[in-house]
Length: 246
Image (cartoon, rainbow, N blue to C red; front, side, top):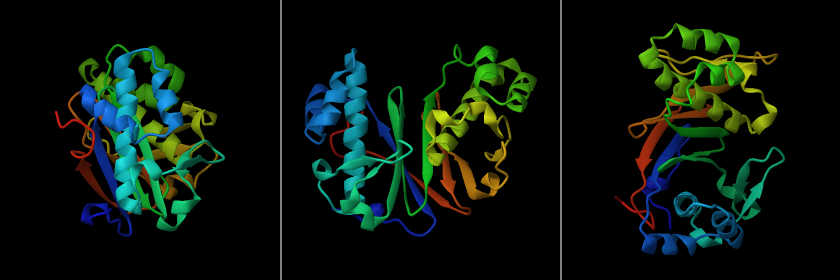
């Protein structure tokens, strides 16, 4: 059943930080909350650590969402929208709960709001990935120029700040890979407040969305994009259910 921490007011977004490191007994408990399709997806991972991370993320998502819609975690069903974005099935539409899940390495984040479209992304900072060649392939030209202007010691963190903000926007819009990453630009880097700078041929997009940095574990970056303006974003640690508290 839901509690006060599962109450969504107007303009409020909850972002849950979920640790994905589980001991084997917790893995088995978590699997019981998953659908047969989710279990099959988990079992397709070659490495055990990837199976555990998937199980932890999706079981936690079910347990957290269940608190908002007064349901048992294992009873929740999901649908995929026209643009490939997951949503709760019609039986829970009356709650108007929007959500988005992202996971990387040993952590996941789950963003939830009422009647507001959103997208969230978390990434583990990998300096070897944050190369100029990758930036040239995926970033807008203005973003590449800005990245080059930063001191080398600051570039890896700035790269993933840019990357998570862009991914969160794409996930909010729900277009997935159909939106080229170089077709829009975001503000990033030391002292830069997160925001959309431009979207090709869509001037109204900048005023439609708000962008927020999220507190993330050391070595990670995370960002949230949500429809509208003037939100109150509350970050919550996930410490219950089948997920290990470390």
